[in-house]
Length: 163
Image (tube, rainbow, N blue to C red; front, top):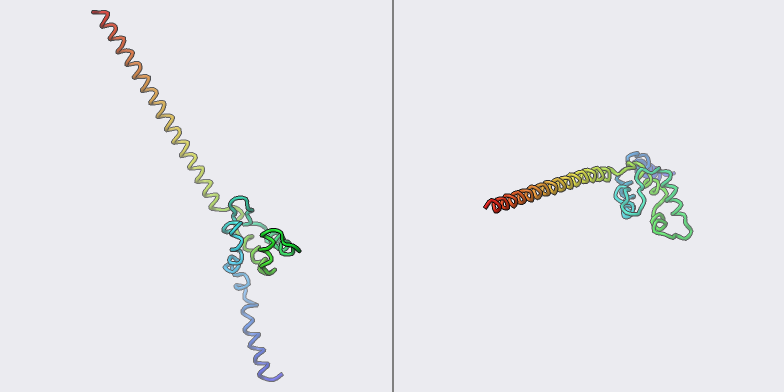
């Protein structure tokens, strides 16, 4: 091998080393998230679906990889997931699966929302109780007013009788 060919081979090897050996690049969270961003259309941001779609956050990476690989391997793609999976290499599917597996299974925003819904229900219950108490007070005032009117009427009748 000539000296210039060895030099070019050495340069090629040196240039490829950072990409092959870099653990930061191999597991770059940003790359994984970008690959998974297509899934957000149906499965929600960060894998927490809205509506009838399945949550995929917190699922086992192996299960997700297997499911997507099965979809990719369909002879005749039948649904949108089969078509989506066709667009990814096996390594990209592994990255997507690892990304979703790294997320918590329960959506923190959904939990905060349900806690807030509970607070709202308590507030509403309090408002309803306030309304009921107001209605009771109003009824008591009506009863007192009716009683006063009866007493006044009785007093007027007595006064007429006395005359």
